[in-house]
Length: 332
Image 1 (cartoon, rainbow, N blue to C red):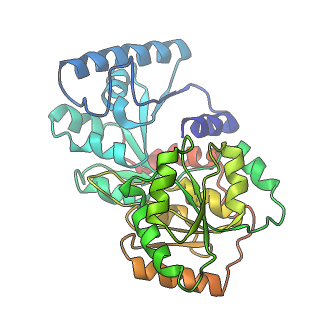
Image 2: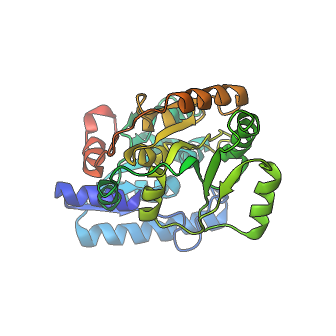
């Protein structure tokens, strides 16, 4: 996301902005540390760093990705008058809204909130419905789109592609259960599994135990550019994310990139996928409905949909431009 936002700012020719990103600041701000002495020490260090950067660059706007830097950016805005935009992806947004202290409440109300999807907006509102949230979506980088433009009538060598890890919230259990039924009518069905950082022999054995009758492939470590090509070689992309313990997928660039590569995509209703997926080139389903997924796959295999190359491409500059529309939010 950070690279995309910077790309959008550059394309729009916007100056006097700084983008604050990263899960940690000074190696201290971490997921589990919203509170405690070390947390407040980290906030102070973070505030000083952001303040220094803002003063040197005469910053008018601070764009924060993700929300770990909410308090630090808020403090800086009060010191030098810069406006703060929080670009919320999903799970991390909730962490900033779960805090009930007056300071967190004040900070939440004095920044401009931009989120990727209606689902993220709905989930945040359960914790605090007094904050205005504007949905701006997400973009796709130029380099990725350049790779998409190179795709010419790709051969559909694979039936299905799954891009993600094997954690329960990625929905692989539902997919494997559906394929166990689907293989009865389609014994030659195959699945390409793309995992971040590649895979281990142990994982290969685990998949074989889960899918004993399905042909599956692990291509190893895949670059972003190569991933675009692999999307195009599949008939259907599937990632059925689950919302578990406030961990959810805030948007779903996997689905957007699959469509751009000419591949139909199936996502989850327990996520922001409905904002990422164009209804004519994909759909979002109940991630727990195994039999429903089997029916959908059978319909797709009987009548393969056509997805034009480049479908759903959105430039980051358009997303950033929407972030700047302050009338949609009460803000500072």
